[in-house]
Length: 288
Length: 144
Image (cartoon, rainbow over all chains, first blue to last red; front, side, top):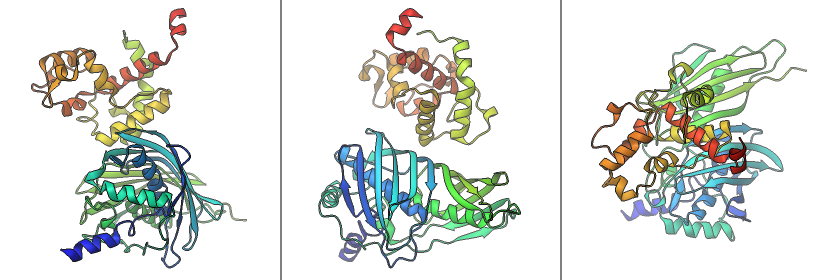
């Protein structure tokens, strides 16, 4: 029992926390922070950068409600994927709460790495739920004070287990389907969330974007163009919590295509029930 | 505040388009009478999404819980519901406010948590029209 408690203590604010320091909180609705991507992790995908911006916004929203409510993933109208992030880089995070109350938070935000914008989130909306159902309000208050003060020691994040999906037969170049088994246990569950472990929406997004990438590799490109590149994700919606051990069906379907642009509709189901959806925008660049 | 059929039909195409996008369904399924939950499969996150999109599409502000608040009118919370169930007076008020909903869909007893099951596409058209009118400055109303 004590061992399990210590393991929980070890992973809380480590295994899935992506804000090291809150550098500025000039008003209740504007917040800036930073996160050092550990140099020894294998990769830091765009979905985790989006998660970092969302977590920064969540700190501001929790503070507004005096740590009585916390946001969970809900909607993002547009996520622009502007540049990749490499391990070792420092992310400068910024978020603005457009509105926040006990029911909902609306926000937008950005992340920069070495002065270059790497991601932009527009029109995001998260349901605000009772914080104590997810985490210890006191521990979050203390963490917030630490982040607003000297900051947390960077480097706590040790990377994520590779969550592989298995492609199932589908229409090559038109549709990609896959089965994804959410692990029963993983370090990130102790941080997301300690009292209510759920599969993070950003990890679902990461799996879906990898599936889109594999579909994109099968879509023919115009003769004078380079490969398809994922530029933005639209209308991201997470409808329900995904518990540990769930088996998800991922489905990416090419819905529109022109010479320079393709639109892929993404849906995720758990036991046939729709749990998430999004649209991914692919574009090509002209070959010089 | 009288809302005519013409008022509703003026905004319905845009509302239908907005809802079809939010619910990822064919626009043809979004009829005025369609129940968002029972016919279109909406869940609580979809209501947030729909309100958010309608706010942007029509440039109005729709406070969360606006429909329930307006439905209750001048009834106090205890007059409207007791122990999570809508009172008789509350049900009468709801039937009058949600006049677009066919009477047989009002079950008795009606749980407060089940009120959103009654909401149709037309319910949201009316919310948008009310908010549009509320946003018009008093001077404009007097001179129009």
